[in-house]
Image 1 (spheres, rainbow, N blue to C red):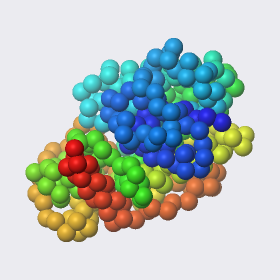
Image 2 (image 1 turned 45 degrees about the vertical axis):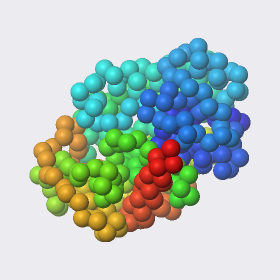
Image 3 (image 1 turned 60 degrees about the horizontal axis):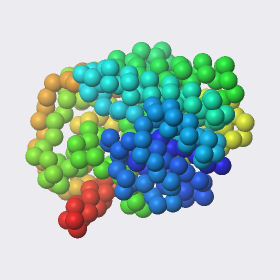
Length: 330
């Protein structure tokens, strides 16, 4: 049964493709390469360059490739950028997802796994935050993802389609086997930025806000390792294939680190001191967001295997060295 992975040339999507291929699944990747990399797509996957919002293209793929399930990763994901470009986010994340859903219904695709975000919670009333927390996103990014969750729920009520929504917390790390990682040069992921500062790829880094109501004043986040996240998607796929009901789950470790704690851990693991500038808050950032993951564990049977911050940082360091070597070989 062939699976369509949208955004499969990107950071998280490429790890999902590896996970699917590792267990013998047939995979088609659709990615417009706006932020992804063709080199990140393994040769065993069929790769098509294009937009998920192209109805004719997507409809043809679903029919010709006999797609039985869709894993939808393609999206814009930078919170501050969404504040300055809300219409771009609503087009890319919401409108194009609607087109993809319509094509899925028309093609009779019954299983849909959606890459959502903890940003749908905004500033939660309590942490760890459960899936039943009030949804009050504070950024266009979070709202653009929440709209897709609503569309999925409404579509599943009207058509023969079941879904799993996975709300990611902060995604970090790289494939433990060194096959993929975060390759975007100007990525905003905290650990990657700090590692690049440690390696001298950046002159230093900024910490945005130290006046939040947290123990050290910096934002607190739950950092889930990217391969553990891919395993959660596999568990979701097994759930749907077994006839499981539509479901929404948080993806995180139920523990968090502050920005300043992460920076200090990067310095410790790398053995390098680097400049850290304290700046004001960024628009759209929440003070603290930590996942309650009981539903992911109890319903989908997920078990974390990579939940060690030091090891996650080591993976990112190794991936950055790999990128250095790749550039040096060109």
